[in-house]
Figure 1 (cartoon, rainbow, N blue to C red):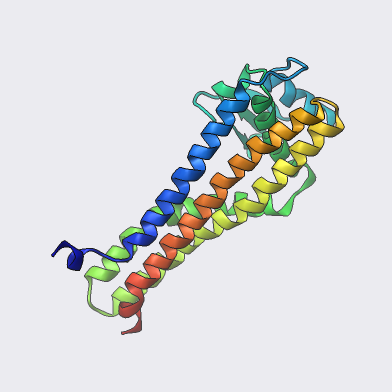
Figure 2 (cartoon, rainbow, N blue to C red):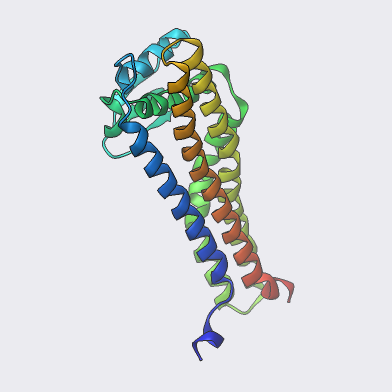
Length: 233
């Protein structure tokens, strides 16, 4: 009896959850493994970030500590590169790799990398869209009048903006990792085997963004399936 009341589109949600969990698990295992590998230069993540930024002529970006695990990020609005507990004082190749990746974002900002500008513009819109999408869709499904189709279309548009943000994020993250690997190799900060280790860490991190994007696309597909009949009435 339960089968007949189960929404079959939930399978799309479950697939997205499994993909994200697998990617997150892969990332955590890889980071933990290379967090135990000390870099030959003995530099901390903070020191590595400052050296990379200065080597590229970037002196107006502050490097700060932020609490949490792998909460590292670059804030383009305030030109602040924030490194987490696992990166800030660690001398591992994983920590230096993550710090270099965030420096890649700072370098994108300094060089006017277009996808980063697009992502920054989309960020507040996508955040608002992801928050308002489902309420609009639910209201559209509840009401049975001309307004319902409008609400459904607005909800789909709002969620689509969130999906677009995820898609734009992919080239931004891939490019930042590529810049990081090039910088670590060209500056001689890490030996080639160490750069190879960093590549594994950043590849695992990139998979989490791919998984997040795939999950968002599956969610959008589910929304389109659930609302298709109502929107066509």
